[in-house]
Length: 610
Image (cartoon, rainbow, N blue to C red; front, side, top):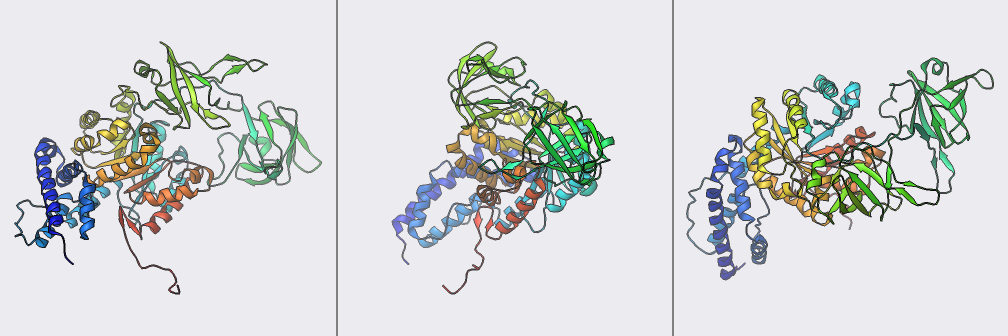
C-alpha cells in the first residue's frame, strides 16, 4: 500500500506543531503542576497536554489520518504525549526519515492503568470483583433506623454510601455510618455539603387528610384495591413491601383484629367505605380498600372484630398535615418572595376570578440583587419553566412559560435555577463549614456542591487544613461556570489526594441548556480521563425504578452509557434495593463489550446459520 508523501508531510507538520504546543503548555502551567499532590504529578501533566491538544481543531488531523488509511487515532485522552510521539514515529518511518530519540521521559500505558486504578481505589475503595464500575447509593433516613436495610444494600452491590447534609442531622448521619461500618468496614462514605443551592421556601400546612386510592382502569373501574398498612405511630411497613397508604391507629384495639375483621366508615364527603383486614404482621395489619376515600382525624371507625358480631367505635391518631402544593399552568403568574412568607396556591372567587396570586419564598434572598428582567427561571429540576417579568424590592413576578398540561406541581424545598444570571454565590456557606467538621471526622470524602471556580476549591482546602483532616474531595459539576472553569478547578483540587468529579446532571442540564447538555457531559468525561480523575455518573439513574418499581427503556440505555464512568450514583426511593440489583447486573453485562470509552469485541453469539 502506497501512502501519499504530501499527505504524510501535512500530518507530520501538524503533529510537530501540536507537540511543540504541548511543551509550551507545560511551561505555561508550571506553577500549578508543581503544586499538585505527588500522586498526581504525571496525571496533571497529561491534563495540560490534553488542553494543548484541544487548542487545535483536531478533526482536520483526524480526517487526514483516516484518508491515509493509517490505523491510528487521537481519540484516547489518558496518555496524550505517548500517542502523539507514537503516531509521529510511524509517519517518520513511512517518509524514510531518521527517527530522533525523544529526550522526554514519557509514561507508558501500563503506568496510566496503574494510576487510574490507584486513584479510583483511593476514592471508592474495593469494588465488587465481578464489576469495574462502583455503585454509590444515597442513604435514606431508613438506613439510620433499620440496619437490615443497610445489610441488604451491601449484599445487592452497594460499594460506597452517600449521605446528604442537606437532610436530617448529625444524630441520623452517625446512626447511618454506624450501621454501614458494622457490616462493611471498608465501605467508603461520602457526604455532600449542601452548598449555596437556591430552593423554594416553606409552604403553609395543608389539610390533615389521607387519600385512599385504589387502582382503576381507563373506564374508572377498580382493578386492584388500595394496599393499606394499619399500625401505631412509628411502626413502619416491613422493608421492600409495596404500600399505598399508611394509616396510624391505636395499638390497643388494633391488636384485637385479625384476618376477616373489617372497618366501616364515612369519609370526609360522607361516602360509605369499607376496609378489610387481610393479615397481621408484627404490630401492624395489612388491609385493603376498594373505595376511593378521604380520611381525616375526625373520621369515625366502626371496627367489626368478627363478622356480624362484636363492633367497637374508634378514631384515627392525629394526622400530620399534607404538604401544600401550588399547581402552575402555562400563562400563570407566580410571586417569588424575598422574605420568609409561607407559600400558598392562588385564591379565586366563585366566578373564577383571581383574588390572590400564588406565592412562595426563596431560601437565598441575596440573589434578588442580581436577577434581571426577562431572564429565564426554572423550578423543580426544570419541570416548571418561567421568565422573570417584574422585579420589586421584596419580590419577583414570574410568568410561567412551560409546565405539564395538568399543571406543574411546586412544593417546598424544590430547586430554583437562574442559568443566565450571575448570582455572586461563592464557596462554602456557614452551614457547610459547620457540617464539614462532622464530615472530616466520620467520612472518607466530601462532595463539594456548587463549586464554580478554583477559588472555591482553595477555600475548601483551607478549611480541611484547619481541621487537620485527610479527606477525599468529589467536585460536583452542576453549573455552567463550573464547566467552563473545570481544568483550573481540577488542577487546584489535585493539590489534595484523592479527588473525583461528579457529573451532577440535574442542575447541569438546566444550567447549560438541554440542547448543549449531551456534549458537555461527554466533554467532562474526557477531561476527567485526561487527568486520570475518577468520575461519578449521577442524577436520575434508574429513577423510575427506584421510585415506582419499574424501569423505563431510556433508563436502561442510560445505565449502559454510565458504564463509561468509574462510579454510578443512585438516589433514594421505595425500590432502591431493586434498583441496586438491576444496576449491578447491567454494569456487569455491559463491561463485556465496553471498557470506559473503548469498545471491546468478544466473539459474537449469533447463530452461524445465516
